[in-house]
Length: 328
Image 1 (cartoon, rainbow, N blue to C red):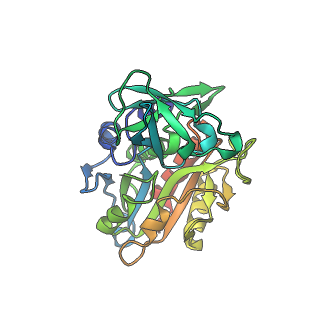
Image 2: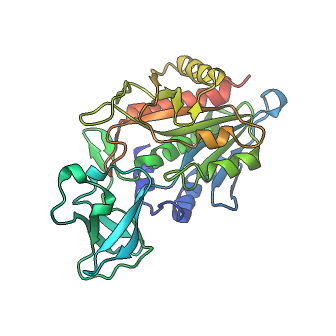
Image 3: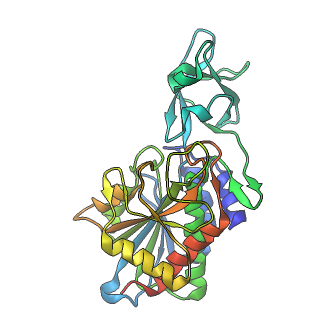
Protein backbone atom coordinates (compact mmCIF):
# COMPACT_ATOMS: atom_id res chain seq x y z
CA UNK A 1 0.00 0.00 0.00
CA UNK A 2 2.98 2.32 0.49
CA UNK A 3 3.54 2.67 -3.26
CA UNK A 4 -0.15 3.40 -3.88
CA UNK A 5 -0.23 6.03 -1.14
CA UNK A 6 2.97 7.70 -2.32
CA UNK A 7 1.61 7.81 -5.87
CA UNK A 8 -1.69 9.34 -4.77
CA UNK A 9 -0.02 11.85 -2.44
CA UNK A 10 1.95 13.32 -5.33
CA UNK A 11 -1.06 14.10 -7.53
CA UNK A 12 -2.62 17.56 -7.83
CA UNK A 13 -6.12 17.68 -6.35
CA UNK A 14 -7.29 20.59 -4.15
CA UNK A 15 -11.02 21.11 -3.53
CA UNK A 16 -12.88 21.73 -6.77
CA UNK A 17 -9.99 20.61 -9.00
CA UNK A 18 -9.79 16.86 -8.44
CA UNK A 19 -9.78 15.58 -12.04
CA UNK A 20 -6.08 14.58 -12.03
CA UNK A 21 -6.57 12.67 -8.78
CA UNK A 22 -9.62 10.92 -10.24
CA UNK A 23 -7.62 9.82 -13.29
CA UNK A 24 -4.87 8.40 -11.09
CA UNK A 25 -7.33 6.52 -8.90
CA UNK A 26 -9.17 5.17 -11.95
CA UNK A 27 -5.88 3.77 -13.29
CA UNK A 28 -5.14 2.10 -9.95
CA UNK A 29 -8.57 0.64 -9.16
CA UNK A 30 -9.79 -0.07 -12.69
CA UNK A 31 -8.41 -3.63 -12.99
CA UNK A 32 -10.16 -4.63 -9.73
CA UNK A 33 -13.71 -3.45 -10.49
CA UNK A 34 -16.42 -4.05 -13.06
CA UNK A 35 -17.02 -0.43 -13.99
CA UNK A 36 -15.75 3.10 -13.35
CA UNK A 37 -17.52 6.35 -14.11
CA UNK A 38 -17.50 10.00 -13.10
CA UNK A 39 -20.73 11.75 -12.13
CA UNK A 40 -21.79 15.31 -12.93
CA UNK A 41 -20.00 16.80 -9.91
CA UNK A 42 -16.76 14.91 -10.51
CA UNK A 43 -17.08 12.05 -8.00
CA UNK A 44 -15.37 8.88 -9.23
CA UNK A 45 -17.51 5.77 -8.77
CA UNK A 46 -15.94 2.30 -9.11
CA UNK A 47 -18.42 -0.57 -8.93
CA UNK A 48 -18.04 -4.25 -8.05
CA UNK A 49 -21.18 -6.26 -8.75
CA UNK A 50 -21.80 -9.05 -6.28
CA UNK A 51 -24.94 -11.05 -5.92
CA UNK A 52 -25.01 -13.27 -2.88
CA UNK A 53 -26.44 -10.82 -0.33
CA UNK A 54 -30.21 -10.88 0.27
CA UNK A 55 -32.22 -8.60 -2.03
CA UNK A 56 -29.08 -7.44 -3.86
CA UNK A 57 -27.86 -5.21 -1.04
CA UNK A 58 -25.98 -2.10 -2.22
CA UNK A 59 -23.07 -0.68 -0.21
CA UNK A 60 -21.33 2.66 -0.76
CA UNK A 61 -17.77 2.91 0.61
CA UNK A 62 -16.29 6.37 0.23
CA UNK A 63 -13.30 8.59 0.84
CA UNK A 64 -12.79 12.16 -0.33
CA UNK A 65 -10.00 12.60 -2.87
CA UNK A 66 -9.32 16.33 -2.51
CA UNK A 67 -6.66 17.71 -0.17
CA UNK A 68 -6.58 20.91 1.92
CA UNK A 69 -5.02 23.96 0.34
CA UNK A 70 -5.05 27.74 0.07
CA UNK A 71 -6.70 30.17 -2.36
CA UNK A 72 -5.33 33.63 -3.15
CA UNK A 73 -8.07 36.17 -2.40
CA UNK A 74 -6.23 39.41 -3.23
CA UNK A 75 -2.82 40.86 -4.04
CA UNK A 76 -1.63 43.60 -1.69
CA UNK A 77 0.34 46.72 -2.65
CA UNK A 78 3.64 44.87 -2.19
CA UNK A 79 2.63 42.11 -4.59
CA UNK A 80 2.09 39.57 -1.83
CA UNK A 81 -0.87 37.22 -1.93
CA UNK A 82 -3.48 37.22 0.80
CA UNK A 83 -5.33 33.94 1.09
CA UNK A 84 -8.11 31.87 2.52
CA UNK A 85 -7.83 28.25 3.65
CA UNK A 86 -9.60 25.45 1.77
CA UNK A 87 -10.16 22.69 4.30
CA UNK A 88 -8.69 22.15 7.76
CA UNK A 89 -5.18 23.48 8.26
CA UNK A 90 -4.20 24.82 11.68
CA UNK A 91 -2.95 28.44 11.44
CA UNK A 92 0.07 27.56 13.59
CA UNK A 93 1.25 25.10 10.92
CA UNK A 94 1.29 27.66 8.08
CA UNK A 95 4.12 30.21 8.68
CA UNK A 96 7.19 29.14 6.72
CA UNK A 97 5.25 26.58 4.68
CA UNK A 98 6.34 26.28 1.04
CA UNK A 99 3.37 26.06 -1.33
CA UNK A 100 2.92 25.55 -5.05
CA UNK A 101 0.33 26.35 -7.68
CA UNK A 102 -0.96 23.98 -10.36
CA UNK A 103 1.66 25.25 -12.83
CA UNK A 104 4.47 24.74 -10.32
CA UNK A 105 4.95 28.32 -9.13
CA UNK A 106 6.37 28.25 -5.61
CA UNK A 107 5.62 30.56 -2.71
CA UNK A 108 6.25 30.77 1.02
CA UNK A 109 3.65 31.58 3.67
CA UNK A 110 4.83 34.44 5.92
CA UNK A 111 3.43 36.31 8.90
CA UNK A 112 2.73 40.00 8.61
CA UNK A 113 5.31 42.10 10.37
CA UNK A 114 4.60 42.55 14.08
CA UNK A 115 2.06 39.72 14.41
CA UNK A 116 2.37 37.87 17.71
CA UNK A 117 2.12 34.06 17.78
CA UNK A 118 -1.03 34.29 19.89
CA UNK A 119 -2.71 36.23 17.08
CA UNK A 120 -2.03 33.65 14.37
CA UNK A 121 -4.75 33.63 11.72
CA UNK A 122 -4.78 33.32 7.91
CA UNK A 123 -5.87 36.98 7.69
CA UNK A 124 -2.55 37.99 9.23
CA UNK A 125 -0.43 36.02 6.78
CA UNK A 126 0.61 36.39 3.15
CA UNK A 127 2.18 34.22 0.45
CA UNK A 128 5.46 35.52 -0.94
CA UNK A 129 6.07 34.35 -4.51
CA UNK A 130 9.39 36.14 -4.89
CA UNK A 131 9.53 37.70 -8.33
CA UNK A 132 6.63 35.62 -9.67
CA UNK A 133 3.28 37.33 -10.13
CA UNK A 134 0.40 35.67 -8.24
CA UNK A 135 -3.21 36.16 -9.27
CA UNK A 136 -6.40 36.28 -7.24
CA UNK A 137 -8.07 32.90 -7.45
CA UNK A 138 -4.84 30.91 -7.66
CA UNK A 139 -5.11 27.69 -5.65
CA UNK A 140 -2.08 26.41 -3.76
CA UNK A 141 -1.16 23.16 -2.02
CA UNK A 142 1.75 22.43 0.33
CA UNK A 143 4.95 21.69 -1.59
CA UNK A 144 6.04 18.89 0.75
CA UNK A 145 7.05 15.44 -0.49
CA UNK A 146 5.80 12.07 0.71
CA UNK A 147 8.14 10.81 3.43
CA UNK A 148 8.69 7.64 5.44
CA UNK A 149 9.37 8.29 9.12
CA UNK A 150 10.71 5.16 10.78
CA UNK A 151 8.15 3.06 8.94
CA UNK A 152 5.31 5.55 9.25
CA UNK A 153 4.14 7.84 6.45
CA UNK A 154 3.73 11.60 6.17
CA UNK A 155 2.55 13.88 3.34
CA UNK A 156 0.19 16.87 3.04
CA UNK A 157 -2.38 15.00 0.94
CA UNK A 158 -2.84 12.10 3.37
CA UNK A 159 -6.18 13.76 4.21
CA UNK A 160 -7.75 11.84 2.57
CA UNK A 161 -5.64 10.08 -0.04
CA UNK A 162 -4.99 7.63 2.79
CA UNK A 163 -8.66 6.66 2.70
CA UNK A 164 -8.49 6.43 -1.09
CA UNK A 165 -5.52 4.04 -0.87
CA UNK A 166 -7.43 1.86 1.59
CA UNK A 167 -10.42 1.63 -0.76
CA UNK A 168 -8.19 0.72 -3.71
CA UNK A 169 -6.55 -2.08 -1.71
CA UNK A 170 -9.94 -3.39 -0.50
CA UNK A 171 -11.11 -3.59 -4.13
CA UNK A 172 -7.95 -5.53 -5.06
CA UNK A 173 -8.45 -8.06 -2.27
CA UNK A 174 -12.14 -8.54 -3.03
CA UNK A 175 -11.21 -9.37 -6.61
CA UNK A 176 -8.58 -11.83 -5.44
CA UNK A 177 -10.73 -13.45 -2.73
CA UNK A 178 -14.11 -13.58 -4.46
CA UNK A 179 -17.13 -11.36 -5.01
CA UNK A 180 -18.63 -9.25 -2.19
CA UNK A 181 -22.00 -10.06 -0.62
CA UNK A 182 -23.90 -7.52 -2.67
CA UNK A 183 -22.91 -4.71 -5.00
CA UNK A 184 -20.23 -2.32 -3.76
CA UNK A 185 -19.65 1.20 -5.02
CA UNK A 186 -16.23 2.60 -4.10
CA UNK A 187 -16.80 6.36 -4.29
CA UNK A 188 -14.01 8.94 -4.32
CA UNK A 189 -15.72 12.20 -3.55
CA UNK A 190 -14.94 15.81 -4.42
CA UNK A 191 -14.79 18.78 -2.05
CA UNK A 192 -14.77 16.67 1.10
CA UNK A 193 -11.93 18.74 2.58
CA UNK A 194 -14.06 21.89 2.70
CA UNK A 195 -17.50 20.35 3.35
CA UNK A 196 -19.27 17.07 2.56
CA UNK A 197 -20.38 18.32 -0.87
CA UNK A 198 -19.69 15.55 -3.35
CA UNK A 199 -20.98 12.79 -1.11
CA UNK A 200 -24.65 13.80 -1.01
CA UNK A 201 -25.38 13.77 -4.76
CA UNK A 202 -23.35 10.56 -5.13
CA UNK A 203 -25.43 8.87 -2.43
CA UNK A 204 -28.66 10.25 -3.89
CA UNK A 205 -27.80 8.75 -7.26
CA UNK A 206 -26.65 5.36 -5.98
CA UNK A 207 -29.38 4.89 -3.33
CA UNK A 208 -27.25 2.56 -1.18
CA UNK A 209 -28.56 0.44 1.68
CA UNK A 210 -25.41 1.15 3.70
CA UNK A 211 -22.75 3.87 3.68
CA UNK A 212 -19.21 3.48 5.03
CA UNK A 213 -16.93 6.51 5.19
CA UNK A 214 -13.14 6.16 5.53
CA UNK A 215 -11.31 9.30 6.68
CA UNK A 216 -8.48 10.48 8.91
CA UNK A 217 -9.13 10.97 12.61
CA UNK A 218 -6.83 12.84 15.04
CA UNK A 219 -4.54 10.60 17.10
CA UNK A 220 -2.95 11.50 20.42
CA UNK A 221 0.22 13.57 20.08
CA UNK A 222 1.91 16.52 21.76
CA UNK A 223 -0.09 19.67 21.14
CA UNK A 224 -3.04 17.87 19.56
CA UNK A 225 -6.65 18.08 20.77
CA UNK A 226 -7.43 15.56 23.50
CA UNK A 227 -8.39 12.19 22.10
CA UNK A 228 -8.30 8.56 23.16
CA UNK A 229 -7.28 7.40 19.67
CA UNK A 230 -3.63 6.39 19.31
CA UNK A 231 -1.39 5.67 16.35
CA UNK A 232 -0.63 2.02 15.67
CA UNK A 233 -3.53 0.56 17.68
CA UNK A 234 -5.91 -0.09 14.81
CA UNK A 235 -8.62 1.76 12.89
CA UNK A 236 -11.18 3.70 14.91
CA UNK A 237 -14.94 3.17 14.86
CA UNK A 238 -16.37 6.69 15.15
CA UNK A 239 -19.43 7.23 17.34
CA UNK A 240 -20.08 10.92 16.66
CA UNK A 241 -18.90 14.07 14.99
CA UNK A 242 -20.49 17.50 14.40
CA UNK A 243 -24.06 16.92 13.10
CA UNK A 244 -23.69 13.14 13.02
CA UNK A 245 -24.25 10.27 15.47
CA UNK A 246 -23.42 6.74 14.33
CA UNK A 247 -26.32 4.24 14.15
CA UNK A 248 -25.65 1.41 16.64
CA UNK A 249 -26.35 -1.27 14.04
CA UNK A 250 -23.58 0.11 11.80
CA UNK A 251 -21.00 0.46 14.57
CA UNK A 252 -21.87 -3.10 15.64
CA UNK A 253 -21.30 -4.25 12.05
CA UNK A 254 -17.85 -2.59 11.95
CA UNK A 255 -16.86 -4.08 15.31
CA UNK A 256 -18.08 -7.54 14.32
CA UNK A 257 -16.05 -7.36 11.11
CA UNK A 258 -12.98 -6.32 13.11
CA UNK A 259 -13.37 -9.31 15.42
CA UNK A 260 -13.87 -11.69 12.49
CA UNK A 261 -10.78 -10.30 10.77
CA UNK A 262 -8.73 -10.40 13.97
CA UNK A 263 -8.08 -6.67 13.72
CA UNK A 264 -7.58 -4.47 16.80
CA UNK A 265 -9.91 -1.47 16.75
CA UNK A 266 -10.44 1.71 18.75
CA UNK A 267 -13.46 3.82 19.66
CA UNK A 268 -13.48 7.38 18.34
CA UNK A 269 -15.81 9.72 20.24
CA UNK A 270 -14.93 12.47 17.80
CA UNK A 271 -14.78 15.61 20.01
CA UNK A 272 -12.28 17.34 17.74
CA UNK A 273 -12.78 15.80 14.31
CA UNK A 274 -13.80 17.76 11.25
CA UNK A 275 -17.12 16.70 9.71
CA UNK A 276 -16.69 13.76 7.35
CA UNK A 277 -18.89 12.76 4.42
CA UNK A 278 -21.10 10.78 6.83
CA UNK A 279 -23.67 13.47 7.52
CA UNK A 280 -24.23 14.03 3.80
CA UNK A 281 -24.60 10.33 3.01
CA UNK A 282 -27.02 9.53 5.82
CA UNK A 283 -29.37 12.37 4.76
CA UNK A 284 -29.44 11.46 1.07
CA UNK A 285 -32.77 10.42 -0.37
CA UNK A 286 -34.90 8.63 2.22
CA UNK A 287 -31.85 8.20 4.48
CA UNK A 288 -28.86 5.83 4.51
CA UNK A 289 -27.49 4.08 7.64
CA UNK A 290 -23.89 5.28 7.64
CA UNK A 291 -20.75 4.51 9.63
CA UNK A 292 -17.28 6.07 9.80
CA UNK A 293 -14.01 4.17 10.03
CA UNK A 294 -11.28 6.54 11.19
CA UNK A 295 -7.64 6.19 10.18
CA UNK A 296 -5.57 7.51 13.10
CA UNK A 297 -3.25 10.39 12.19
CA UNK A 298 -1.01 12.57 14.29
CA UNK A 299 -1.03 16.23 13.28
CA UNK A 300 -4.10 15.53 11.15
CA UNK A 301 -4.87 19.23 10.58
CA UNK A 302 -1.40 20.24 9.45
CA UNK A 303 0.59 19.90 6.20
CA UNK A 304 2.41 16.90 7.73
CA UNK A 305 -0.04 14.31 9.10
CA UNK A 306 1.57 11.05 10.17
CA UNK A 307 -0.12 7.65 9.75
CA UNK A 308 0.91 4.10 10.66
CA UNK A 309 0.71 1.40 7.95
CA UNK A 310 -0.50 -1.12 10.55
CA UNK A 311 -3.68 0.96 11.03
CA UNK A 312 -4.21 1.12 7.28
CA UNK A 313 -3.73 -2.63 6.90
CA UNK A 314 -6.20 -3.18 9.73
CA UNK A 315 -8.77 -0.98 7.97
CA UNK A 316 -8.28 -2.93 4.72
CA UNK A 317 -8.74 -6.29 6.42
CA UNK A 318 -11.78 -5.10 8.38
CA UNK A 319 -13.54 -3.70 5.30
CA UNK A 320 -12.67 -6.69 3.13
CA UNK A 321 -14.17 -9.09 5.66
CA UNK A 322 -17.21 -6.88 6.15
CA UNK A 323 -17.96 -6.71 2.44
CA UNK A 324 -17.22 -10.39 1.79
CA UNK A 325 -18.88 -12.02 4.83
CA UNK A 326 -20.82 -9.70 7.12
CA UNK A 327 -23.63 -8.20 5.02
CA UNK A 328 -26.48 -10.60 5.86
